[in-house]
Image (cartoon, rainbow, N blue to C red; front, side, top):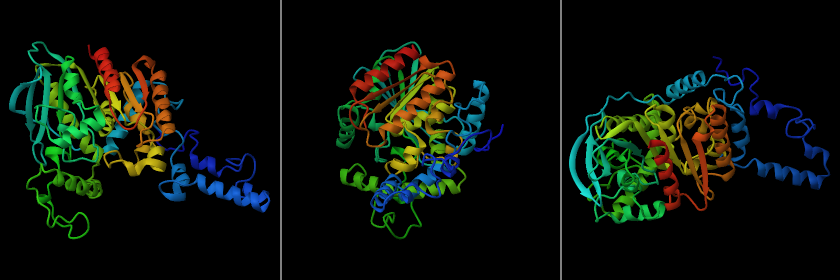
Length: 433
């Protein structure tokens, strides 16, 4: 397999921009259109060109975008990929190599507490990974269920809130933290969506992933940053549930993402690789349960949960159905427009040379996938959301699985509201029944 992005006639953006008949429609690129115009028109053309080049990295945007092949080298959209399984193997191996996730053994989960709440059996679980504090998780299933049920790994969002993890999408008591209630109102129409999908006949597991909730970095663990906003002098882990302390922690944790990501690169891994490893460990726990049908397991989530859905669905064969909400676009969208709105949990160095972002989710086109978008989502451009949609549709169509892909656009900003929940739950019901 030739992995040279410029091989086999794969035109790059750089080739196009170098072409003498490129964007200037027959006018030599070195001469430029403005040199053929009267002075006033030339100035206007020059200004328009400069404005077109604006991006979140200034006028370097077009140049940076041109460095990658127009169609990444391992894209199934290339004509040279005729055999689906050969492509899947190549795409998966390269993605796995670049993510470099840590190898984790199946964790031993402990039931710390069990009770019922609003028609659901609730288990508070925990397990210890080789690093960090114990992972805490919530398992939800219909009260009185006897036979094995389909399972869903419900993936919590990022939301700029690392203090909370599982609590963002669950409710296990009439008493809830005010910030938990506020979060659910803002993004989920006031619903704990993991509870709602459990009531529809699923065993649902929600766990704190790397750097969130029980897995978050504590101030007391920090050493070696003596200045700047990450200096923990005067900060305390005491009274962590206080609202002001949670807000201060989330501000600090947002800054700390830069340090964590760089340190993980130095360790020979990546943030999405570590998150994938921890999500797969949770999937180990869910799929091993006697009350779960291991052949009927799905996953889904909003925002950061949608991001986690992309990697987990593309790379773990145990996922048989997925719903990605509020997280679908292209690498160009992140590069030129929206990287500043997103977490380091996305970025895997060099992967964009081989696959566009939606193609990670499309590595397994036998899996029924639903992608739900918000048309006014402030985290993406609508144009690039639609481009990602088109890429996925092309992959599923080429794989003769067009009926297994569905996308939807809902009015409004970043959210997973009631209408979207109904659509997602229907998808799970259809394919996990």
